[in-house]
Length: 349
Image 1 (cartoon, rainbow, N blue to C red):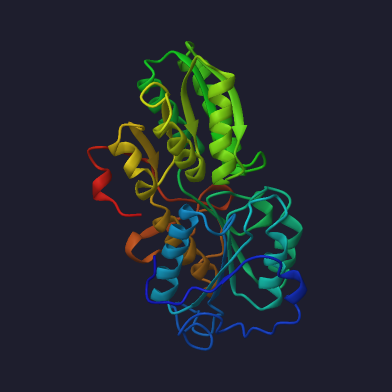
Image 2 (tube, rainbow, N blue to C red; image 1 turned 90 degrees about the vertical axis):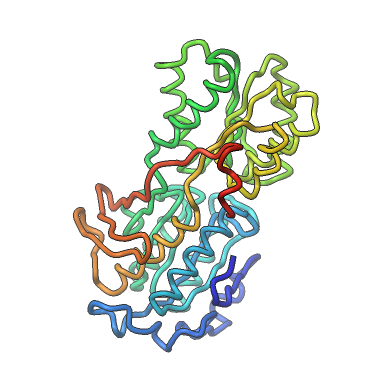
């Protein structure tokens, strides 16, 4: 998904070149001006060089959120670069944070693989003047300036529990196929799912939480293992776009198609064929492009001094309108959306 800017991607080991490669802070990957242009307010001379660090590269979900951030950065006249590891592990993002700070980034947008493992690197970056905004998956609040939350943990967990309960008749065994065991957002959602199942769905038994590490093949194999381990399994919840598409791919050509329900969080383009062939009835998500877009505008607002990140601060986010900073520096995008056969053809991301 491109929006008229060149997206620079750097993967693999960067530590060796962090000090040796002198990338000019203002011009890594865009036709923006030397300092990113005048974004309004008091930020005419602001350093609107934005670095985006997803959990891992090559993930369709993050490709989409990066596209949204790229679009926003073009709108406010900044420069943009996407960097990241090939695999989502707790410490794999540290070197990219250090490099962004060393290269003079004005803002860093991060989806954290671990709530604590990145904090030392982020603290160093902030000490160097980098504004840090997390999105999708947060760090500890003291390690960043803002968190752009796709939806509340309660809302995300509830929609997935409601969907699986409806699809299996509110009884039977279910399993969760998650991302990595350290993923902040996944763990918060799963904890709330467990509470909701215990309180409101006593006839549904959660038999296992499995981890596919946001890797397609690992998630595919974990799906097979769950079905072999639990022959009475009625449903799988996968709150990760990589996991749900891998599980759907396995189910679609197996004897379990139409017998084991699958729901969770996915993108329409990933899941369309599985909805159309009857493997999946319904799943949920927010628009990740909007999430990245909002994160970039929030970063711009911090850099220019439009906001400081205090509760009650408000800022404009382009086509999405005005947003307010809530408790612990959180900014909420909105509620999850349910995709099914009736509406999935209306979306392209």
